[in-house]
Length: 345
Image (cartoon, rainbow, N blue to C red; front, side, top):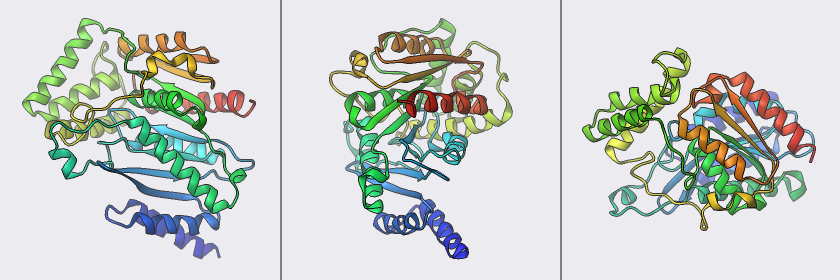
């Protein structure tokens, strides 16, 4: 039996990584493997403008059902940002879900969408909600009982992903039992940068206009990796290498207008989440980076002040990519939040 299960695991990984495959067939394979106790799945969720890639890792040695941890990546990365967290938290008994935001990673717009002018507006928080509902439906059907799986998620988002997580909690409170905002930004929270920071951002946009992908990726790697107000080289080569690869990919998409944050119009819920933070009733943990840009750090403080829910704010000795720089400390902080504020409530 062990060999058979291993074979199924290998097949699932193969199909989960295949770019051209039947979503229906993958879901069926996922159901079969789930029934044998191996609960890893990867698939695409179809939208009118393109498919959204998602992957799910079930809890290992899980006891009573726990909320799924939904990890939403930054605007300068993709779903692989959370590799270390997926491995760690699934091993600690938490089911984990992550996905590529539309226009990032494997979540690519259709050719019809890219040809459209003006391009249709997308709602990233709606994509997140749809994927969560889809997963809940699949798990319930596989288990044969809604009590076998939690119908809520703890949304964990970094940077732009933090904003999407907040929007999800505001628009779909019935889906969210906790919120972790990591160096998060939210449309409508108005803060400002130092002149030196704005100058670097201006250089990045100039590189986009010039089509200079390498220069743009280098600027963003420094800005979000080292921190905009410190010298180049503060962050280690491991973090720098990962971040540069993401920034290069995303900058190329921006130049080619095929993805990223600036060529795909998006909007949040109405009224805006920034005006509805007092509606959030779940406990919130907020992480900031000591060397991060000023507007992000100040924005996180404003979000914390506007919340009426239980909230904790922690500063890490990092810049923007907190979980990459201090993975062990970050994991421990999130784990403490989960056990103290989620499992105890």
